[in-house]
Image (cartoon, rainbow over the protein chains, first blue to last red):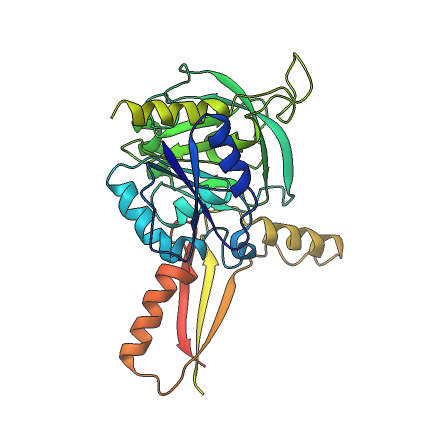
Length: 231
Length: 81
C-alpha cells in the first residue's frame, strides 16, 4: 500500500506521518504541494504544521495549492484522505469536510495528551476501533476551535459525521466538543489531535501503564490499510 | 495605481476572542463606555491598470472565495480607495 503525505511550506509533521505509515507496515510516499501529481498513491495524508505561517486563515493558502486540485478530485472519487491539525484546517478550507476553525477560545496555544471518544467507526480511517473507544493522542494547536452554524451542526450530528469528540476537557472551545469530522461518504476525515504522534511505544503520550507508551494513533493507519485491502 | 479595499469581519454570532481580549483591556483602562470590540481584516489590493465593473466583480468573487471563509466570516465591503 502506498500512502502519500503532502508537504506544504511550513508543514512540520510530514515526516512523522511518513514514519507512522512505515510503522504500520506500509510505504509512505512524499508528495509536494507544488506538483499536480499524486504519484499513484492509494490514500493521502495532509499533515500538521503551520503552512504559510497560518497567514490569512490557518490552512487557507495551502488549500489553494496546485496539488489540492488532485487531492479534492481524488477525495470526491472516494480515496481515503486524512487531515491532521493543519491538514484538518485545509480540508475545511477546501470544503471537503464541514465547519471551520477559529482561534482557540482562550487565545492560547495548547499542547496536551488529549482523551477522545471515537464515535464513528465506519469511516475509512476508524474501522479498527470499536464504537465509543476512548483513546489518548497528543494535540497541539492555536486555531483549533471547531465551529459551524447550527443547521450544519445538527446535520453532521445526525449523519454521524462527528467522528471524534474531546473527553474530560474541551481544550479549545470547539462547539459540541468536536475534535474530528468526516465528509458524508466517510472517506475524508479531519481531526485536530495528532495520531501520528502516538504510533511508537516510548515516543507517544503517557498512559496509566507507562510513560510515553501510548500507541492509540496506530489504529488510524491500520484502519485505512484494512479499508484499502477490502476494496 | 488604483487600490481596491476589501473588508472582512467575523460573523456576528461567532465568538471573537481577539476582540473580547481587547474589550477586556479597555475595561481595565477604565474606558467603561465601550461594551464590545470586534476585530476584522482589511485587504488592500493594488491593481495594474484601470478598475472597471468586471474587475470589481472579480475581486468580489476573490473576497468570497479566498479572502474570507463564509463559514466564519462575512465580506462587509468591496470598494475602490
